[in-house]
Amino acid sequence: MDKLYLLLMLSTTLLSGTIFEFSTSTDTYKQTTLNSGVHLDILRAYPSIEYVDDTLISITIGVGTGTFITQYYDISRDLFSELYDSPIAVGYGNVVYMEWLNSSLRLVTTNIFDNLAFYKEFELDFAPTAIPTNVVIRAEFIDETTLSIIYLHGENYEEKSLILNLGGAI
Image 1 (cartoon, rainbow, N blue to C red):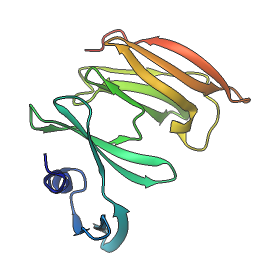
Image 2: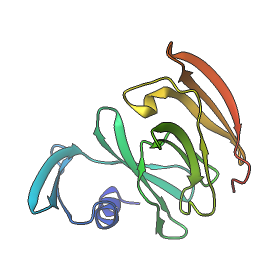
Image 3: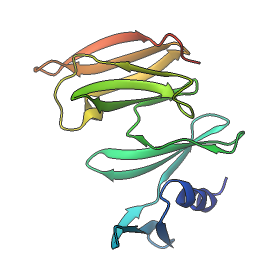
């Protein structure tokens, strides 16, 4: 699929109310957003667009300080996901990301397109980091119901490995 075509689709779903000006000479785009009557202009590199598998595409835009937002597109169903803040793993129709919930950092795994189909949180002994995604060194799906993670834990930032049973993942 053509990169510009995906960017145009992205502009209508990912950042509605946003105007894009593309520059092929610098491989950047200018993003203009009208927010509460104020124009905000940001010059960014093009989003990263990658195939996750034969039917799933990830569209990622860096937002600074090691964080990014990602939206997934299912080619076979012509369906966009919600936005995910710095996802750390994707597989078997699920996405894994970190989220602050009730003043506690949690690892969340959910169905990419329908969190009512599957959603599970894990509250682990994560090390206190400035950027939540930095606490996970590696995360990968072993199979549909099993996630392997290596993360930093405790005040001394020690590495810890865990195998998490996702139970009802589909």
